[in-house]
Each structure stands twice: as C-alpha cells, then as structure tokens.
View 1: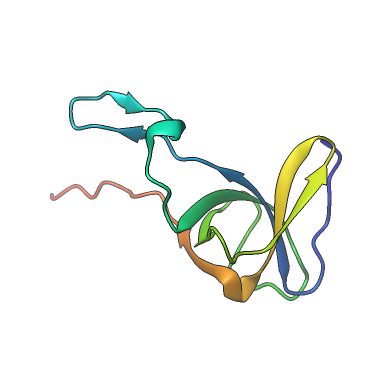
View 2 (view 1 turned 90 degrees about the vertical axis):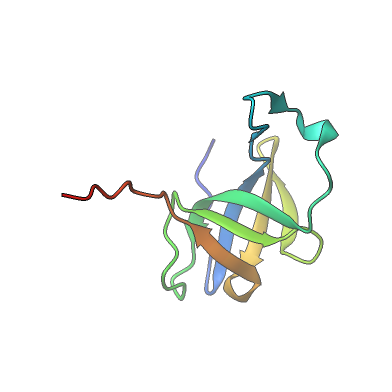
Length: 98
C-alpha cells in the first residue's frame, strides 16, 4: 500500500476486529460477536501535532462517532482526531517475582 500521511492532529488507522475466544479456546467469528460500541485499529500514520500515539500502536475508539472512513487503494481506513481515541492497547509484559 502506498503510504498516506496524516496531518495536524489527525491519525490514520486501519480498523480490525479482534479475534475472540471462549475459555475453551473456540474462536468466535466476527459475524457472531455482539456489536460493540468501540472499534480497534492499527495506527498507520500520525500528524505532526499528535503526541503520545505512534505508528504501529493499536488504538480503541468509538465505533459510530469516531473519524471519517476513507478508501485508499482498496483498503478501508479511518481518519480520526486524537480526541476521538479512547486509548492505546499496550502489550502486557509478564513480571517475574524473584
């Protein structure tokens, strides 16, 4: 995909549906999941005024009020203002007790 650059306080993301599993390890398909009010996306580009969000981060935002949907080279992307982003999903690191 040709790079696309966000400007000012905007963030360009590629939405995705997180894989859901039951406690027994059964994967629940996206079509069977409840419609949640939030969406998850991978950050592709950040504008020059954006602080604390980096390319490659996974963010969560409101599914129905967050951003503007765009089509870029047959990929559905969203342009989101930073104040529409609820948070960044951080990878949890196991802490060993020694």
